[in-house]
Image (cartoon, rainbow over all chains, first blue to last red; front, side):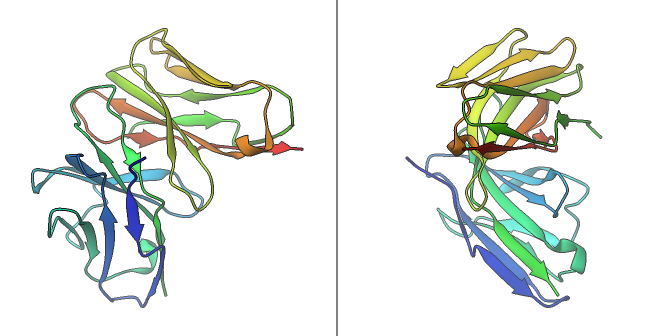
Length: 116
Length: 112
């Protein structure tokens, strides 16, 4: 069964460093998402991406964050200058379409980011 | 800010017991309600997506109901097994948005 994959599974970085989290969505999917879960808190939406542009973003997704689809398969989240509070589990998700109510978002296993 | 809540936060049941938990969400501008099953170190697994008031979905021993007018959904597990141990997340989608808003999750532990 097709699945969303994410790399790396864990990343440790120093405050102020740039990190890039990578995702390979399911191949025929057109919509891509990033969510995160800070330890002990709810999973929260960051951004959705369609047709090579951001279609929706939350207030969390500020200028420190960017997303890109550099080739036909990868979908990346870049954090330019990490802060301690960016430590979280980051989930990538994809869906075939987005407009239908019954459309499901399929999630990857997450990347645990620790900022020291 | 959308308020999506789940209860209980955690529960322990004996193998063979049936159990249920609740997701509450805003009753206005409803579009869809998702249930996911999440085991540690794995991807959250989509269980159900429910879109109509009165919807009932079933997958093996797991079923779910939906009441959009009062803003709640129940997830039922019949005859719990140790492999059902996981966190169960509901996620609410309102009309006009692509994002889903997650609840706090219910962590289920089934004791053999």
